[in-house]
Image (cartoon, rainbow, N blue to C red):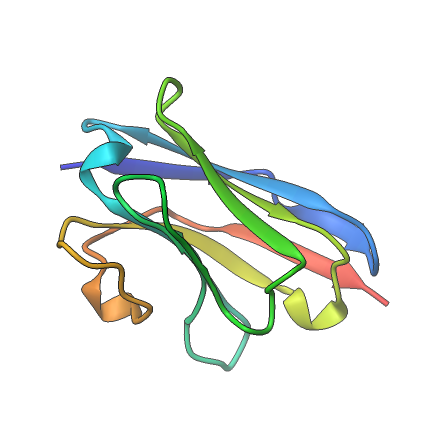
Length: 124
């Protein structure tokens, strides 16, 4: 199985940028569809972005499309989430997750492996 560790969160002003990293160990990320999710206080965990196992396909929530970019570096076994033009409503704990199944899913229930999360706070 794979172990995931997120980093890169922090406090940023609205309009700013952050890059989150998800370092994987135990198995190569090419084995999994990799996703980013977020959870704000009092809200359910929601899909943010995903990249398929082949690395050729990416998927985004409408709320982040055009602002966030998911990418991966198989040599470093790491997945990234570049977040630009951040808004206060992007404030949440961001989680990296891995799904070993064939198709990319947007629901968190399909993802078997999760990191501990990293806090992103966007001030207005």
